[in-house]
Image (cartoon, rainbow, N blue to C red):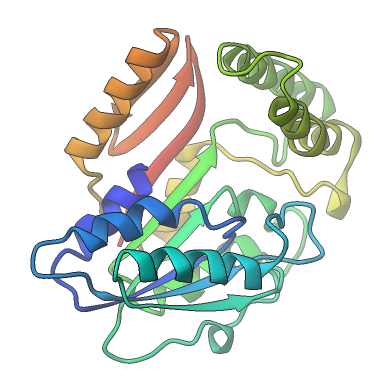
Length: 279
């Protein structure tokens, strides 16, 4: 939601908008943004979404990019928002500028949501796709880049501190899920078995290139983004306040905090997710 707010703010005066989502999943993030653009004074812009998802990855969901494209196109048609969708079924390690369909005259927004943590960095490969992607995107001159990542450190840590970090993080994660869904709920079981369990096993049991869950705290992401040439872009105070109100009304143990230009979502005293924007 905070990422969408930053994109909407950056694109408020643009007539043609190109959004590149580096891990689009089911595309659900873009539903409220399309609705927001539909209500924009003066009419919606022409939107083009390039959705990237690795069909070989366990993180690719929703039955394929073609289904995601049809779902978003149908929604946009219902709200009278002109939309084009382009799917790119490939790993982030494979993405080159030629795959992104950049066109002159379009304002560009790039979304990295829970994606860069899966890219190998300099500790894994000399190719360092984590920083390569950031430099490549900076070269496209985007109006805004949004980053959303889990807030904990498992990238280069040795086994024991990595185990302790994962234990602390996922304890808070499961406690937060407890107030959302009962343990026998089908959706919860699916998330725990096919998402969270895989993450935990990969973090604890795998090393080298086999360990694809390589989270970093926001401080490290800031360093990478600045080295790539980015500068911070302010998040929307209105959107941040709305998120905070919604969560406080839902459960008092959820915590939303603005800190150093970023928005942190936490459970009690533990940060779980950090969101920020750059240009």
